Length: 98
Image (tube, rainbow, N blue to C red):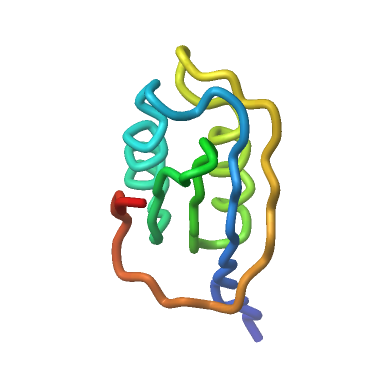
């Protein structure tokens, strides 16, 4: 009998700290999400951080977090705080305002 594991969706919240505003970070995150098939959203925070909610297969989330931890060339990521969330069942990925 063939044992097929269903895809395990993982939902995470990322708070990305450092020089991450004014450097195209949200667009970088959105492009990355679209390339990897991640759903959710990204937004700037009033405190200068960037907040992301991301949902995808566990292995894709790991890659997504790794790429976001580097950011675009003009950014300087100092820290990424990761929190696991209950599934949200997002249908797409977008940029939100504050």
